[in-house]
Amino acid sequence: MGIGFEVQEEKNTEIGIPAKVIVYNDDWHTFEEVIYQLIKAIKCDLATAEALTWEIHTKGKAVVFEGDLEEALYVQNVLEEIDLSVEVII
Image (tube, rainbow, N blue to C red):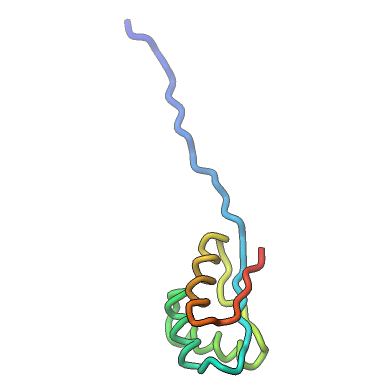
């Protein structure tokens, strides 16, 4: 008769830290630059990028991403490639 044993699977219960990425308006980037960089950073469609860019322009800022901190830091890095004014809030 064999020896009985129990195998326990370890479940990945890691919970990401929630974060937001805010982009602030400035006077030196064109709408096209911001739209392109938003598409690149958050992988959104043109209409979403245009709407976010308009919100940044008219309200002075916009939350462009909400999600896991690790992803937020990636988005921040991509947006900062062209020196956009970006803040990550935890």
